[in-house]
Image (cartoon, rainbow, N blue to C red; front, side, top):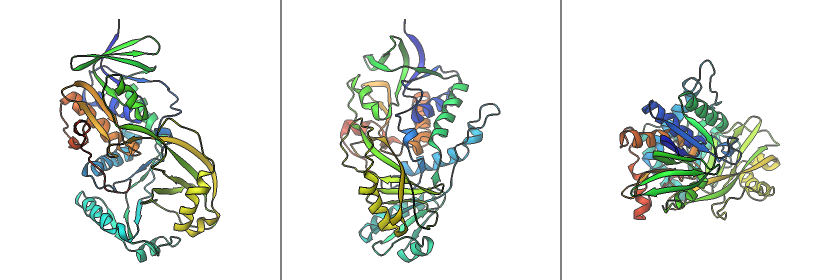
Length: 389
């Protein structure tokens, strides 16, 4: 006999745990389980993330998801408390700074206007203003930048564990097991077969398996354009005096921020071969990141890398935007929450709420994320983010 739940969530990191929390918030009487193969979360993207949250996007959906996520994280210690145990996430309102060369100014200004329309606290800075604000920055080859004052970063581990602990306190069952197969008939997934031999049936299934989401979709013959993309994060110190910095990003995907007495960040190689590769290239910092960082901030000429670790982006190969929704007309009760392409942690609260609304209410009731649905995959119509990714 299969164990039955109203809703089964497949994947228990920050995305699955967010969905579980919001499902129990919207439907307290619903029975919800989360199947997670590794309760230590050793290889999940959440614990290998940089923890950044920013509104500097072009798509209204991404801006609004970030605004909700930022507010949610700021209230997290109290809102996710269980009994007298708070849920610290170490939020730092350090700001974000996107910088572009002259040929990128039209795009930056267009996105800046969109961000202002969505009531984001952003400022457009000229090269001279950038130099005044950040004296260590080399600005001679820049056209300008946009600084978002209220953005920042948090502890991804605290966010995940806080959501998981809160979901469990609300009655969610976390099952340490691996999905090996999915049975479906008609327009519904009926059952999940687990590695232990257990079976779970449910009225609705949520695929929140992150970089492994495509493997689950393959079990129900559902195409999903999501691939694992390896990226590196580095912790390094400057070696020379330098001011504290916001989360700095450029069009070449250099991205780093102040962290303690040093810095945390990296430079994503978009052409990295796709696959589940967690090997660490310990020469990557010196070969790729250091030259770019030292060019932009000359005091980093003497930078020293102390640690490098790898993680995976669940890269949406269609357009770099997340896929949130079900396969209408085919598998109505199978919902996908994947393809966040490096933005998963900041968008997890809003995405979890969205999937809960779709399941409980049958429609999105807070944010209109229709354009991020699975329908665009079926149509083969990308909906691209025009901002710096």
